[in-house]
Length: 204
Image (tube, rainbow, N blue to C red; front, side, top):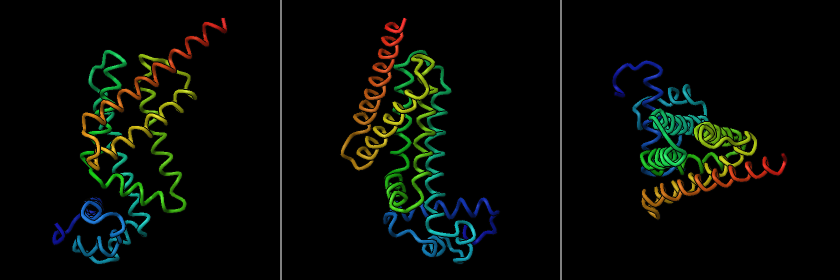
């Protein structure tokens, strides 16, 4: 591919694929624009033109992973779900499976971004986007106040992320991670639903 004349978008995808391969093989510390250019068979200015800085490259990798995870959950939820339990199972499986498919790059990229000043907002937006997706998915069966529901789902996303990291590292099996994520989400939603119902009953 490096020897062919690629469109700008094709070249960007090639560079991102190359960067992901470097992270997979050697970790995020080995990632530089010069290294990506060398491995992709292009000149350094080409890589700098697309990403400008190493941070810009890491942000592009994170957004690519984030898009893959969002698409996995959205695609899974297009199936006809009939209960809260089924919805929670689909969300847990989609998240864990997507991270396992991506591999250790997920943790390496997010950890690298976490150590860079000014990227906190990007990571926060990603977590909030997931929380919103999860809340919309479960509220069909368990209506929750938006403010409380969003906070709850932020906690669920954090738990799912931690479980996915453990599964990627081989410290948990895929089945264990999915089951734990499912249990946490279902328990949290049910507990919040009961609290809302009790509050409504006492306020009448």
